[in-house]
Every structure is written in structure tokens, then in C-alpha cells.
Length: 284
Image 1 (spheres, rainbow, N blue to C red):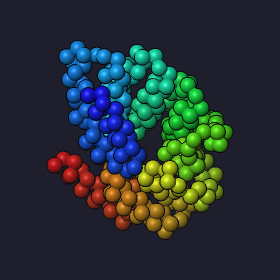
Image 2: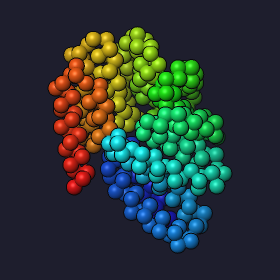
Image 3: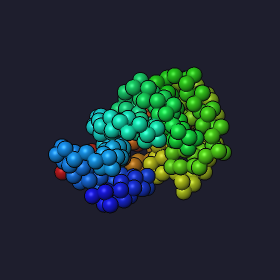
Image 4: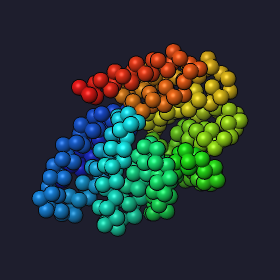
């Protein structure tokens, strides 16, 4: 089981970061079911528990990509189930990893205060700069969503300082950090600063996960609407809708609907229709 499980968890993470979160769920669900059944029977070997914790987190994060907003609490519950195991082992790296994944799912489920608390712990627990760099962008997003401008600015300064010192990942890179900065500035009522930055997005590289391109286009469209650039916003949302459908990420379609609102009814309708199709497929 361990020989099968370890590669399954790694491949599921690669699939998710490549924009194939549904395939990641399909890989992880039977593995988690087998590991849960083994634990229920009293088989709690150290290696099995370690694999179970990682598989639960992976499943929760993958579900956080494919579920609509009203069901994202399910993803947060799966990541939460790994916390007790991670803390039992007393491994700072694993604990920081589980805390940051759980904190991000809490943020997506609109439990922002709890998300900031978990992500602050993830950053404090991180055993090295690479682990801290993995937690800081998620903390910045949560702090911005909470409207905590002071914490957001402090975290973004630290991420800027780390950019040249750690390896870039699908989350920690100039492109993703630009989107986080834009959204945080808008959330902390500094729209004018966001407008000045919106046209200076770094060119995405191969390290950027496909879903981040969708996330960034929606955020840019939001800033464009605030700057009264309805044409540019419509174009950004059209592209984002097409990509969100291909990647099957319904909660980003819901973001598009909110961003378009009554000012861009055609884009709002297109995203709504696409979301209905995905929901019908999920129900089937």
C-alpha cells in the first residue's frame, strides 16, 4: 500500500498543479478510503499515518479546486483531518504544510479570521525559507481578504525579500504575487494603487499553475472595472470563463459572475451558464 500510495499522492499533486484537479480527486479518493479503513481497524503504523495525513490534505486541496463555493467547507474539513496527525509527529515541515493548506481552504470557505490564524502558525512553524515562502503568499491573500492592510503589507514586503533567495514554485513567483498584491490592495481600499499596477503584470512562465492565469484575469478585470475600462474587463472575463470551463474550476466562474455583475451582463450570463453545466455534470 505504501509503495502504491506515495507515488499516487505525488502524481495527484502534479495533476492538480497542472490544472487537472478532477483527476487528482480520482487518484486520491480510493487511496484515502483504503487508508481510512485500515486506521479504523486499528492499524496505525507510523508510515501509514504519515501517508494518510498527506493524502487527506491532497484530497482536500483538490476538492477545493473542483467544488463550487457553497461546498468548499468540505475541502476545509478534509484538510483539517490531517492536523491532529501532523501535530502528533512533531515534524515542523509537515505541520507547516498542513497548516498552510488548511488555512487556504478556510479562506476560500470565507472563514477568514480562522484562515489568518492557521496561516500565521504555518509561517511561524516553517523550518526554512522555502517552507516560509510557501506560506506567505497564502497568508497575504487571507490578510487582504480580512481587510488587514498592516499585516498584508508586512507579509508582501517579506515575500519580495525572499523572491531572489528561494526557488520559484507554482505559487511563489512574480506572476502569482502580482495578482495577490492587486487583490489585496483592492480589499484594503487602495484602489488607485491597484490601478497603477494592473498594466505591469509579469509575463507568466512555465512555473505558473494554469489556474493562476484564470485567477489573475478575474482580478485584473475587477481593477479594470474600477478604472471604468468596461471593454478591457469584458475581454479579460471572456478569456477567464473559457479557461475556467476547460480547467473545471466552478468557484472561479462564481468569481466571474460577481465581478461582472450588472455592468457586464453578457459575461455574467456566460459564466452562469457554464457553471450550471458543471453543476449538472457533478450531480450526474
